[in-house]
Image (tube, rainbow, N blue to C red; front, side, top):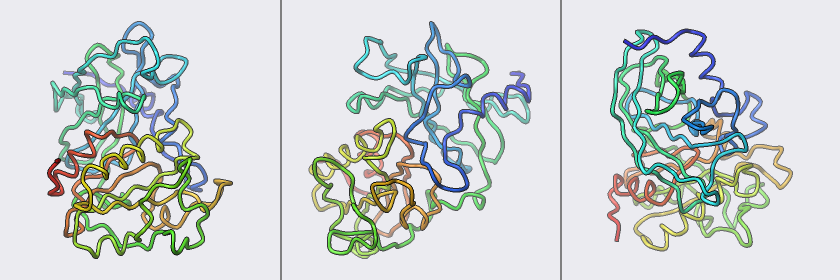
Length: 298
């Protein structure tokens, strides 16, 4: 039986990702290395890349590797393990409930590699992700009651919302901070996209104001997927702030009660959310999510 102290839970929880109740800064894209990150070996640490808004069912727990200088990127000489294996412990019973959860390396093409662990957790509570070869202190996280999380969740119908478009910015300027030119995902509002009865990929993120550049790679990956899939999917992007000062949160964030960014909502032709990719994701995960929405890769 794995013994986990209350102190260990508090220690591990401190690397949670999100922004404050005032909704004035978005930190999911800026996961930083801190004393709460857990050692892997030889100075390598684990950094949580997921916001603490998980609910029962399948949970996605992406982590990155880091050193004291920050998250390790593909520009370094570091040799990333191709696969990591982990287990999940229930902190209320000190028991391992899921083990031998293996995941391959993702995100090499976005220069910010990560490992998106997935597992099923049936009930709310406090849990610990422990990666083989890493510290037994692990990375603590909570699973909340479904009604405690206001953000649209897998299984929900994605609410309709009139996002800014090229034709009507709706008070958001610029409507897209991608450089050197805006992305092409502002022709239709989210409402109009959902009315087409096609799978929809809806991204909320701000390329210009994402402190570690997570949002720009996410958007560029989405553009690449759109080129491949064509009009089989409707793609929509909404910015996080109303202007370049990045001080006023945009209506799109408030409409979904978001506390982090970026987030990619994948819905099927009936507007049901089949996947929500939080914080960091790559082409492979986007393509797999769209397949769950009924869109086969070409």
